[in-house]
Amino acid sequence: MNYEKHYRLLCQSRQQLNRQKLKCNELGYIYYEWHHIVPRHEAGSDEASNLVLLTAREHFIAHWLFAKWKQTRKAWAAVSAMAFTSNKAERKLTSRQFELCRIANSKANSGKNSYLYGRTGSAHPVFGTKHSEARALKHRANNSGSANPSYGRANSDETKLMKRHSALKRWQMLKPTNARAEIMLIIEQILQ
Image 1 (spheres, one colour):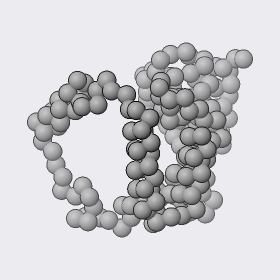
Image 2: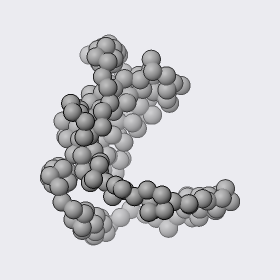
Image 3: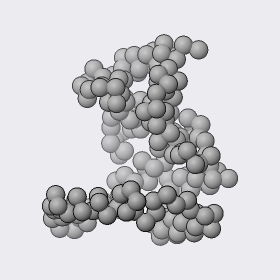
């Protein structure tokens, strides 16, 4: 398969559609993501000629095609990050599952569903927060490499289960919506 040809065709055909990114509550809303045709890790720019709006599924496929074409570590890291996997995880998402996750997450965290909805000024959690450069350096030093208490440690199955249970409890404390229910179903399917 000629991955370069398919990658270029995908990007060019979607650029010609002149898509527009709308807000969730606007009529005709379709979830789109910006994609760099020449990735930033390959010196790609943020200019309009290097950007294209893709659906979540198309975005995943574009990164997959690019990685298959270039076969570089950074290209595969982008695919891995999009599929929520790591070297230790054995979870694999199809492009359809990935798209459903992205759409459901977007709906669940936008507008009135957002935990930041209506929180402006002093009501916003980070209002007035300013950290000095010295504080940032200290934080990095205390939490990176061997200074990090989790450095080099793998979580046991029991710890993973506890973390998952804790995350689910936090998730259930939020006001349930159809989008959140969709995400939970997808997550449960993936974890099985």
